[in-house]
Amino acid sequence: MKRSIYKILIPLLFCVLPHAATGQQDPLLTQYMFNTLAFNPAYAGTSGMLHAMVTSRHQWIGFDDAPSTQTFTIHTPFTAKSFATGLTFIRDEIGPTANTSAWFDYSYHLNLSRSVKLSLGLKGGFSHYKTDFSKLIAEASPEEAAYFETPEAQMLPNFGFGTYLWSDKFYLGISAPRLLENSVENEVVPGSYTIDEKRIYLLMGGVVFHINQDFVLKPSFMLRLNESSPLSADANLTLFIKDRISAGVFYRDPKSAGGIVSLKLGNQFSIGYAYDTSFDSLASKFGSSHEFMIGFEFSFKKDKVLNPRYF
Image (cartoon, rainbow, N blue to C red; front, side):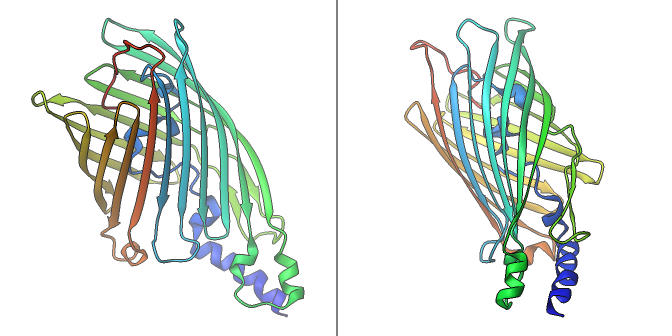
Protein backbone atom coordinates (compact mmCIF):
# COMPACT_ATOMS: atom_id res chain seq x y z
CA MET A 1 0.00 0.00 0.00
CA LYS A 2 2.71 2.43 1.00
CA ARG A 3 4.64 1.56 -2.15
CA SER A 4 1.63 2.68 -4.18
CA ILE A 5 1.54 5.90 -2.20
CA TYR A 6 5.20 6.55 -3.02
CA LYS A 7 4.48 5.92 -6.69
CA ILE A 8 1.87 8.67 -6.54
CA LEU A 9 3.87 11.01 -4.30
CA ILE A 10 7.04 11.06 -6.38
CA PRO A 11 5.35 12.21 -9.61
CA LEU A 12 3.59 14.92 -7.61
CA LEU A 13 6.89 16.12 -6.18
CA PHE A 14 8.38 16.41 -9.64
CA CYS A 15 5.32 18.30 -10.82
CA VAL A 16 5.69 20.73 -7.93
CA LEU A 17 9.43 20.98 -8.64
CA PRO A 18 9.57 20.92 -12.45
CA HIS A 19 13.15 22.14 -12.32
CA ALA A 20 14.14 18.77 -10.92
CA ALA A 21 12.56 17.07 -13.88
CA THR A 22 14.18 19.10 -16.60
CA GLY A 23 17.45 19.81 -14.83
CA GLN A 24 19.40 23.04 -14.80
CA GLN A 25 20.99 21.96 -18.05
CA ASP A 26 23.07 25.06 -18.72
CA PRO A 27 24.80 26.64 -15.74
CA LEU A 28 23.29 29.72 -14.14
CA LEU A 29 26.35 31.77 -13.19
CA THR A 30 26.37 35.36 -12.03
CA GLN A 31 30.07 35.69 -12.98
CA TYR A 32 29.45 34.43 -16.51
CA MET A 33 31.51 37.26 -18.02
CA PHE A 34 34.65 35.75 -16.46
CA ASN A 35 33.80 32.15 -17.42
CA THR A 36 32.48 32.50 -20.95
CA LEU A 37 33.73 29.10 -22.15
CA ALA A 38 30.99 27.44 -20.09
CA PHE A 39 28.47 29.06 -22.46
CA ASN A 40 30.28 29.57 -25.77
CA PRO A 41 32.95 27.26 -27.28
CA ALA A 42 34.16 30.07 -29.56
CA TYR A 43 35.63 31.80 -26.50
CA ALA A 44 38.42 29.19 -26.30
CA GLY A 45 41.85 30.77 -26.72
CA THR A 46 40.65 34.36 -27.10
CA SER A 47 42.70 35.52 -24.10
CA GLY A 48 45.89 34.40 -25.85
CA MET A 49 46.93 32.41 -22.79
CA LEU A 50 46.26 29.16 -21.02
CA HIS A 51 43.29 29.95 -18.83
CA ALA A 52 41.60 27.81 -16.15
CA MET A 53 38.71 28.62 -13.86
CA VAL A 54 36.71 26.95 -11.10
CA THR A 55 33.34 28.26 -9.92
CA SER A 56 30.99 27.04 -7.21
CA ARG A 57 27.45 28.38 -6.88
CA HIS A 58 25.09 27.60 -4.00
CA GLN A 59 21.41 28.58 -4.05
CA TRP A 60 18.70 28.52 -1.38
CA ILE A 61 21.18 28.60 1.50
CA GLY A 62 19.76 26.81 4.54
CA PHE A 63 17.70 24.26 2.61
CA ASP A 64 18.70 20.60 2.31
CA ASP A 65 19.47 19.37 -1.22
CA ALA A 66 19.26 22.95 -2.53
CA PRO A 67 20.51 23.69 -6.06
CA SER A 68 24.27 23.92 -6.48
CA THR A 69 26.52 24.24 -9.52
CA GLN A 70 30.24 23.60 -9.92
CA THR A 71 32.18 24.27 -13.11
CA PHE A 72 35.74 23.77 -14.28
CA THR A 73 36.98 25.17 -17.57
CA ILE A 74 40.41 25.19 -19.17
CA HIS A 75 41.42 26.39 -22.63
CA THR A 76 44.51 27.48 -24.53
CA PRO A 77 45.49 28.70 -28.00
CA PHE A 78 48.16 26.90 -29.99
CA THR A 79 51.36 28.81 -30.71
CA ALA A 80 51.54 30.13 -34.29
CA LYS A 81 48.16 28.54 -35.00
CA SER A 82 44.72 30.01 -35.53
CA PHE A 83 42.84 27.55 -33.36
CA ALA A 84 42.36 26.70 -29.69
CA THR A 85 40.94 23.87 -27.64
CA GLY A 86 39.34 23.60 -24.25
CA LEU A 87 37.56 21.36 -21.77
CA THR A 88 34.43 22.13 -19.78
CA PHE A 89 33.12 20.16 -16.81
CA ILE A 90 29.84 21.05 -15.10
CA ARG A 91 28.00 19.47 -12.19
CA ASP A 92 24.47 20.56 -11.30
CA GLU A 93 22.53 19.25 -8.32
CA ILE A 94 18.97 19.94 -7.24
CA GLY A 95 17.05 17.70 -4.88
CA PRO A 96 17.44 14.05 -5.90
CA THR A 97 18.85 14.80 -9.36
CA ALA A 98 22.51 15.38 -10.28
CA ASN A 99 23.72 16.25 -13.77
CA THR A 100 27.42 15.85 -14.57
CA SER A 101 28.54 16.92 -18.04
CA ALA A 102 31.87 16.95 -19.86
CA TRP A 103 32.63 18.81 -23.09
CA PHE A 104 35.46 19.24 -25.57
CA ASP A 105 35.63 22.75 -27.07
CA TYR A 106 37.29 23.81 -30.32
CA SER A 107 37.57 27.29 -31.84
CA TYR A 108 39.07 28.75 -35.01
CA HIS A 109 40.16 32.42 -35.05
CA LEU A 110 39.97 34.83 -37.98
CA ASN A 111 41.54 38.30 -38.18
CA LEU A 112 38.90 40.66 -39.58
CA SER A 113 41.15 43.69 -39.13
CA ARG A 114 44.19 44.73 -37.13
CA SER A 115 42.12 45.00 -33.95
CA VAL A 116 38.98 42.92 -34.52
CA LYS A 117 38.85 39.12 -34.53
CA LEU A 118 36.14 36.54 -35.10
CA SER A 119 36.12 33.09 -33.53
CA LEU A 120 33.98 30.13 -34.63
CA GLY A 121 33.51 27.34 -32.12
CA LEU A 122 32.16 23.81 -31.78
CA LYS A 123 31.64 21.64 -28.73
CA GLY A 124 30.72 18.04 -28.15
CA GLY A 125 30.21 15.92 -25.08
CA PHE A 126 27.66 14.25 -22.86
CA SER A 127 25.51 14.76 -19.79
CA HIS A 128 25.11 12.08 -17.14
CA TYR A 129 21.86 12.38 -15.19
CA LYS A 130 21.49 10.49 -11.92
CA THR A 131 18.34 10.50 -9.79
CA ASP A 132 18.40 9.15 -6.24
CA PHE A 133 14.78 8.54 -5.26
CA SER A 134 15.75 7.60 -1.70
CA LYS A 135 16.19 11.33 -1.00
CA LEU A 136 12.45 11.78 -1.50
CA ILE A 137 11.50 9.30 1.20
CA ALA A 138 11.59 10.54 4.78
CA GLU A 139 10.54 7.29 6.42
CA ALA A 140 10.24 3.87 4.82
CA SER A 141 10.49 0.22 5.71
CA PRO A 142 13.54 -1.77 4.47
CA GLU A 143 11.39 -3.30 1.72
CA GLU A 144 10.15 0.10 0.57
CA ALA A 145 13.62 1.63 0.70
CA ALA A 146 14.98 -1.24 -1.39
CA TYR A 147 12.50 -0.37 -4.12
CA PHE A 148 14.16 3.01 -4.56
CA GLU A 149 17.70 2.31 -3.36
CA THR A 150 19.19 1.93 -6.85
CA PRO A 151 19.65 5.40 -8.38
CA GLU A 152 18.62 5.78 -12.00
CA ALA A 153 21.31 7.00 -14.41
CA GLN A 154 21.08 8.15 -18.01
CA MET A 155 23.84 9.40 -20.34
CA LEU A 156 22.87 11.78 -23.15
CA PRO A 157 25.29 12.93 -25.90
CA ASN A 158 25.00 16.40 -27.37
CA PHE A 159 26.87 19.09 -29.30
CA GLY A 160 26.71 22.84 -29.80
CA PHE A 161 28.25 25.81 -31.58
CA GLY A 162 29.14 29.44 -31.02
CA THR A 163 30.58 32.59 -32.56
CA TYR A 164 32.57 35.27 -30.76
CA LEU A 165 33.55 38.70 -32.11
CA TRP A 166 36.01 40.72 -30.05
CA SER A 167 38.63 43.46 -29.83
CA ASP A 168 40.26 45.37 -26.97
CA LYS A 169 37.11 47.49 -26.65
CA PHE A 170 34.14 45.13 -27.00
CA TYR A 171 32.90 41.58 -27.41
CA LEU A 172 29.77 39.98 -28.84
CA GLY A 173 28.94 36.29 -28.77
CA ILE A 174 26.11 34.04 -29.95
CA SER A 175 25.90 30.38 -29.03
CA ALA A 176 23.70 27.30 -28.73
CA PRO A 177 25.47 25.02 -26.22
CA ARG A 178 23.06 22.11 -26.81
CA LEU A 179 21.48 21.51 -30.20
CA LEU A 180 19.93 18.10 -29.57
CA GLU A 181 16.68 18.09 -27.61
CA ASN A 182 17.08 14.78 -25.81
CA SER A 183 14.29 13.33 -23.73
CA VAL A 184 14.53 10.34 -21.39
CA GLU A 185 11.71 8.95 -19.26
CA ASN A 186 12.27 7.65 -15.77
CA GLU A 187 12.45 3.85 -15.83
CA VAL A 188 12.33 3.24 -12.07
CA VAL A 189 8.89 4.83 -11.68
CA PRO A 190 7.40 4.94 -15.22
CA GLY A 191 5.40 8.04 -15.97
CA SER A 192 6.72 9.99 -12.99
CA TYR A 193 8.88 12.45 -14.92
CA THR A 194 11.13 12.90 -17.93
CA ILE A 195 14.50 14.54 -18.42
CA ASP A 196 14.04 17.08 -21.21
CA GLU A 197 17.02 18.90 -22.69
CA LYS A 198 15.67 22.01 -24.37
CA ARG A 199 17.67 23.93 -26.96
CA ILE A 200 18.74 27.32 -25.64
CA TYR A 201 20.24 30.27 -27.52
CA LEU A 202 22.55 32.73 -25.79
CA LEU A 203 23.50 36.27 -26.81
CA MET A 204 26.15 38.07 -24.79
CA GLY A 205 28.12 41.25 -25.19
CA GLY A 206 30.06 43.99 -23.45
CA VAL A 207 31.89 47.28 -24.01
CA VAL A 208 34.96 48.69 -22.25
CA PHE A 209 35.22 52.40 -21.40
CA HIS A 210 38.57 53.73 -20.15
CA ILE A 211 37.67 56.51 -17.72
CA ASN A 212 41.32 57.26 -16.94
CA GLN A 213 44.55 55.38 -16.30
CA ASP A 214 43.21 53.74 -13.14
CA PHE A 215 39.52 53.17 -13.79
CA VAL A 216 37.74 51.14 -16.46
CA LEU A 217 33.98 50.71 -16.74
CA LYS A 218 32.42 47.71 -18.46
CA PRO A 219 28.68 47.24 -19.03
CA SER A 220 27.77 43.74 -20.21
CA PHE A 221 24.71 41.58 -20.79
CA MET A 222 23.50 38.06 -21.51
CA LEU A 223 20.17 37.02 -23.06
CA ARG A 224 18.82 33.46 -22.81
CA LEU A 225 16.16 32.33 -25.28
CA ASN A 226 14.36 29.04 -24.78
CA GLU A 227 11.14 28.18 -26.59
CA SER A 228 9.73 26.51 -23.47
CA SER A 229 10.38 29.41 -21.07
CA PRO A 230 10.29 33.24 -21.08
CA LEU A 231 13.24 35.32 -22.25
CA SER A 232 15.78 35.78 -19.46
CA ALA A 233 18.27 38.65 -19.33
CA ASP A 234 21.30 39.60 -17.23
CA ALA A 235 22.59 43.18 -17.16
CA ASN A 236 25.90 43.96 -15.45
CA LEU A 237 27.96 47.05 -14.71
CA THR A 238 31.53 46.44 -13.53
CA LEU A 239 34.21 48.92 -12.44
CA PHE A 240 37.87 47.84 -12.71
CA ILE A 241 40.33 49.62 -10.44
CA LYS A 242 44.00 49.65 -11.45
CA ASP A 243 43.54 46.30 -13.22
CA ARG A 244 43.56 44.58 -9.81
CA ILE A 245 40.16 45.02 -8.22
CA SER A 246 36.73 44.93 -9.77
CA ALA A 247 33.32 45.59 -8.26
CA GLY A 248 29.97 45.47 -9.96
CA VAL A 249 26.22 45.16 -9.73
CA PHE A 250 23.81 43.15 -11.83
CA TYR A 251 20.11 42.68 -12.47
CA ARG A 252 18.64 39.43 -13.69
CA ASP A 253 15.17 39.41 -15.16
CA PRO A 254 12.89 38.31 -13.67
CA LYS A 255 13.34 40.05 -10.33
CA SER A 256 16.77 39.25 -8.95
CA ALA A 257 19.85 41.38 -8.36
CA GLY A 258 23.17 41.34 -6.56
CA GLY A 259 26.81 42.30 -6.51
CA ILE A 260 30.15 40.97 -7.73
CA VAL A 261 33.70 41.59 -6.47
CA SER A 262 36.99 40.15 -7.71
CA LEU A 263 40.66 40.52 -6.91
CA LYS A 264 43.69 39.74 -9.04
CA LEU A 265 46.55 38.14 -7.10
CA GLY A 266 49.80 38.75 -8.93
CA ASN A 267 49.85 38.14 -12.67
CA GLN A 268 48.33 34.67 -12.70
CA PHE A 269 45.66 34.15 -10.05
CA SER A 270 42.32 35.79 -9.41
CA ILE A 271 39.46 35.22 -6.98
CA GLY A 272 35.87 36.39 -7.08
CA TYR A 273 32.61 36.36 -5.16
CA ALA A 274 29.02 37.09 -6.18
CA TYR A 275 25.86 37.45 -4.13
CA ASP A 276 22.36 37.59 -5.49
CA THR A 277 18.84 37.57 -4.10
CA SER A 278 15.35 37.55 -5.54
CA PHE A 279 12.60 40.15 -5.21
CA ASP A 280 9.91 37.69 -6.26
CA SER A 281 7.57 36.98 -3.33
CA LEU A 282 7.76 33.20 -3.78
CA ALA A 283 11.41 32.82 -4.81
CA SER A 284 12.59 35.13 -2.01
CA LYS A 285 11.42 32.57 0.56
CA PHE A 286 14.18 30.23 -0.63
CA GLY A 287 16.92 32.65 0.40
CA SER A 288 19.94 34.06 -1.39
CA SER A 289 22.70 32.60 -3.56
CA HIS A 290 26.48 32.69 -3.16
CA GLU A 291 29.02 32.10 -5.91
CA PHE A 292 32.80 31.70 -5.63
CA MET A 293 35.43 31.81 -8.37
CA ILE A 294 39.15 31.02 -8.66
CA GLY A 295 41.00 31.71 -11.91
CA PHE A 296 44.47 30.99 -13.25
CA GLU A 297 46.15 32.19 -16.43
CA PHE A 298 49.58 31.50 -17.88
CA SER A 299 51.30 33.02 -20.91
CA PHE A 300 53.73 30.89 -22.90
CA LYS A 301 55.42 34.08 -24.14
CA LYS A 302 57.27 36.22 -21.62
CA ASP A 303 56.54 39.41 -23.55
CA LYS A 304 52.91 38.50 -24.21
CA VAL A 305 50.48 41.41 -23.75
CA LEU A 306 47.34 40.43 -21.83
CA ASN A 307 44.67 41.00 -24.44
CA PRO A 308 41.76 41.23 -24.02
CA ARG A 309 42.05 42.25 -20.38
CA TYR A 310 38.47 42.64 -19.18
CA PHE A 311 36.62 39.67 -20.70
